[in-house]
Image (cartoon, rainbow, N blue to C red):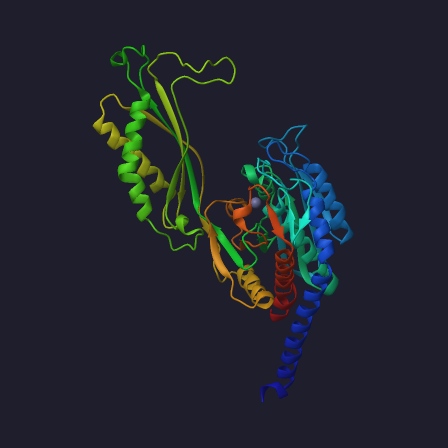
Length: 449
Ligand SMILES: [Zn+2]
């Protein structure tokens, strides 16, 4: 029988050890529950609001002190000259790295440190970190300081239980995800922090729920459409040419042809929620006629025929579509309107675009986290794709790193809401998942090689 051979015995011992390591790590993290709560509370109590980008240095220095204690080498990196960076609101990031005993792959946990504005409707103190009924409340608790805390506890527990691991662990706290990530992950990626060679596996603990693995996101294409007209007195509109009416024709054509076409286009990407499994388009803003300045505006605009109307569209596209096709579809539409309306003039300005990305289900970081979810929660993970983008876009495009997922505690729908919270048990379990994934990637994976 196989297990009687030397190799078989070794294999059985290996399996036994693996189970033992999992159990010890499991218990280790469970025993750090209070520490996990305290860490999350302290992170929430730093009001890292973005905009404007408050207290980034404070939180980065806090993380630096904490991770140095766990044996990490740390670097503070300011993204000088990126949007919003100023002496008053400098864009600080922290990157920490801890080498293992022998060379091997590097697992990187990336969390954004910024939170969105508080808004109204809170019954809890937004930066209080109050605990009630097994939940920690506060702006950023779910998106994503709970995930950041869970990854730190996971790494610290893993280091305590498996001090002889191979490779390296990195943890970063990065700026500005909520405003595009230019002063955060994009800047670091440009400096090579997310390049293959330095990093092998990236986990972004965004709040996607503890049993879901987020493989990527849909694409984004933003453009401004301007229709032109001719100014005249409002009492004699026939002497002018109304740019808003021209835009009205654009909107009518969109309702008639574009929206129905987008609704029919379905993706094989497992996008959640269900409504986002198709191509979508939002109209972000619409301006026609005179400006309505905050100061000095009486509520009565002058009686003029608008000579310009601008509209910004936010088109989210699927992995099955190409950005050039997305653009051409809008150009064709505008040309059709032009064919129907004499004097129709327009300009189309592309503002920014992000390609859709989806990590393969058999990528090593995906299979490791999937196995860990199986061990901790006793079920298969759900694989999802995010309707909107997050920092994976920069890791994919600038870092050229394809082995990247989002996985973390918290319910996505609570992000940016009043009374945002993260469940303590969810944090403990996702921390266990992250730690077991480290065992898989930095201990077991290495033995297999
Ligand atoms: Zn987030």
